[in-house]
Length: 111
Image (tube, rainbow, N blue to C red; front, side, top):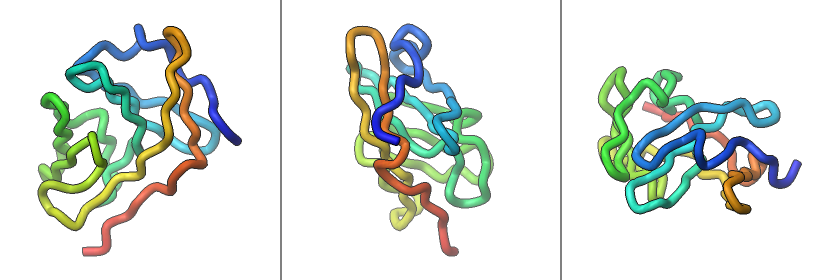
């Protein structure tokens, strides 16, 4: 599919996140403190809860359901450490945010 325009940077303010349908995937766009834009899977790998309902604190995302926590700069789990989120390539062109939804595969936790 390649890179697809998902939104404008104005749609997701710094320190905020929003979920978007991109092709056949639901993608979470997080605009981290400091300006970095990250695209990851929108569903928690633990019990398929919408991550957009969680809490974004600087660069850390906590799922609202069971408090699984992720470092969005790497998409690796903090709690538990073995957890992982898909990380999709992001490209900014002017105010437009482009994501390659085929750049990774959504992760599912095997507890």
